[in-house]
Image (tube, rainbow, N blue to C red; front, side, top):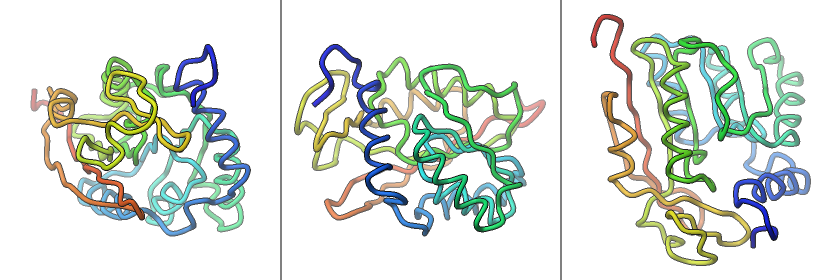
Length: 225
């Protein structure tokens, strides 16, 4: 349940801090399937600089670095990012990875057009309002260069936990201490306005299993409108 008097997203920060502290490297060292796919997409697009939002303890950020990308990893959990930095140093990838504690409800701490690609695995479907999600995607658009690629995954309204647990409104439901904003296709399409929507791919992950979409969208190239 959310802490009394606090926004769900604020309460979730503490939840994730405790979770990473109690379960170091909780997702293991292997990258997510979504990150493996994204790396291939980024490589074809000629990307070099990748921003990962919601990097957690870094399994995907370190995979991107191992693929030869320069990675900026952002998360609101200092505990998770500390684990990322420790493993980056151990694996010799420290020079390729920079980490920053950041709340995505605020503007991204990067200049306009400073990255080639952005990746976010289940970050947009955390305890964010629809307005905050739109603002975040606007920030992603700002920091991407022309022709930049955005790959993100979200749990959707076909998931077994949709409608279950504590109700926060605006499509957000809390189950097992974790709040999720479940996406419908209308929201996906709205977030792609002004982009080229390349793919909406349905897949499953985990034991429930969680039901997700993997969305790939790109900005127009320079001079392309």
